[in-house]
Length: 318
Image (cartoon, rainbow, N blue to C red; front, side, top):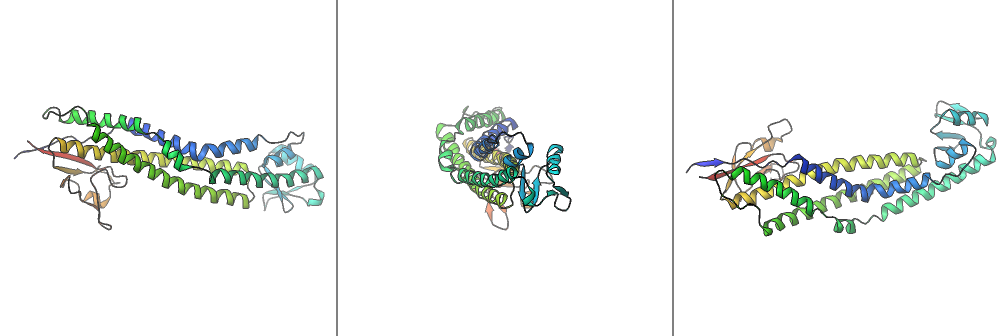
């Protein structure tokens, strides 16, 4: 009996990007914004002073330790340090002066800065420890985006088969529920695992920052780095989850119209994994996915392996 290959479903990039923004917003709200808020509050607590040097110490821009002023200097601060008798030491990249020669108000500001910084770090660690991912994940809503994705792939599916096969215009409510529930839970587990890892990483970095005597500016950089990591993770999860959802959808819908097999098709570029490249062009049953990782024996359909960009080209008997 003659066979016919149908066009595989390609999800519009706009839907992936929409999904990515939703995941990123969640990660930013739960991991980044609370810490940025605390740092902003810390910066707003600088006491007014006519002396830029004292302001810099109170804000954490400069630190005094072991007879040396460390931190971020400008022309004004350098002049004030030279004025009180400090001299620049290029070996340590700071201004050196015996503690006994430092004016009392500046010494007091330095001592208070250490106390404030200790409290600040304790507050930051408390925020990290109190991050409630369980509650946040329970409240997260991806249903609207899942619906948009399903509508997008359903539209492509209908267009790809409508010339030769009559199909129902949309998937059934039972099929929709199965797909969305499966991948909603999978996504939440992925976010929870990632968030737990990042909390541990953040905690270590904050503690290290404190032990090294760094200040709020360094923490700001750490938070920005955290945001950059979140962005990369959001992009990865968006691609991964939409690929999984599209693959799951494809299997259900193409089985509905009588397809029992598909041809494996890679993206035909240098990023294709060796095990996947060996599957290219081969025909497999929807009911028996091939081995996609020879070392582990793991089996999966196209798009369901880790960041797999391969496609299943459905085959039907005409």
